[in-house]
Image (cartoon, rainbow, N blue to C red; front, side):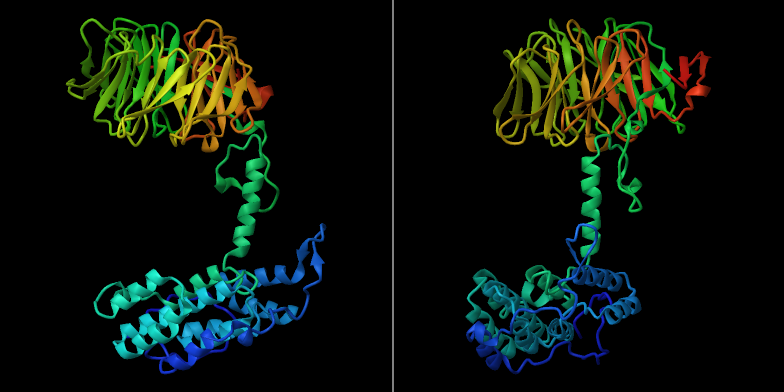
Length: 580
């Protein structure tokens, strides 16, 4: 039984005979021990230098060394399987991929010639003694494990005592190796392939000695990421990035064109939210109803269900974690749970003498939470059994409430200007203390940030990892009387969008806080916005004008703008628009 080999990227090397047992040089452990532990300076050669092209540079800036550039291209050709092309480039350029000592060293590792590889390692001329010892340990550890694998216990013991222990590093691992001599433990079973050893050596040795296999890919990816991060309007998938030209998005990648107007509500639309899978949009209204809209294959909305049953305005509609159900919150009335497929009401949650002002789901979807008019927080299972009820000043008259995806943190507005972050496991509380009254908040998808809307016409982004701290502020929208909501959106939630009392939608760059676009179109205050989590170029806004606007990309020739109004008994009135 031999050592299992991984497929190595083709490197320029002489063909060699395969060894049946997978290792050699096992009887020279004492001799090699002395060489490893002699003065390292006696065995080290001068640091490796290349024979040609080191001082020559290419590129307009004069900062790219030609020899390094050629070597990285050569390494990439071998990695991609273009061995002949790699060898030809080495020959034609006169710039070898690696120094001959390095080629010999890697060949010895692949052949399992561990004693010779240790000697060659010293000849490479590494300047840091710690690197030499760490690499030697890795080589000798592999030698020990392979000897053990083939039941050469005596030779393995000699390697451990005379070669590995004298290095005086990684004592814990030495003890583990010693234990494997008397057991069938991990030392005997987990023998890395030699290509894996080469990978680990690559992480230990300087890149100038062994060029990382995917160095060119890493350089190109970093360049693309820098371009992407510097793009103020970036809102495309990584798959849309190209190497052929520098990346730069324009405003046209922001959903800024009204593509559809939904008019099935008969009064002010107060709240809307896309489902997690992006297949639906739910809205709620002062007209005491909620509506589930379905996103069709062409991106247009159709009315799936109108949810009727509340006797008061519906302040919010929240999707379950699996998008199979929604909760609707009747203002100081009741909470209802609905089935998305059928549109049926599944359960009503209420408490005598008090009504809900906010609601949300448990992280696992097996319970609901609600902020009540008596400023308590109540929790029910799906069947309506009350599991907990926290009394006291826990919520405000106008409030949001949410639970993080891991179920650990309960987030709520506990005073006019304070958000409570309650750790349900440790039963400790952290506070976000604002300077003005908080009107609403929303959590980022990764649960690391909270977006807070304030009475003073400012939106603030807080980091809630560790001690809460303000990250960015957003200004420009109008808010004086009504509850206005904002949201995260776009590529990696890189934008902040908000409604406004001046009938516009505002969008900021999340990192910089710069206002990048204002979207007119509504005829009344915009109360809420929601950005599709699956379609970067789709956003919805809800307004006091009784409509919902669906925003998309501006792909329409302005000279051919038309409006088409479609009426339907099931869908209400849908305006499909080519303009504002």
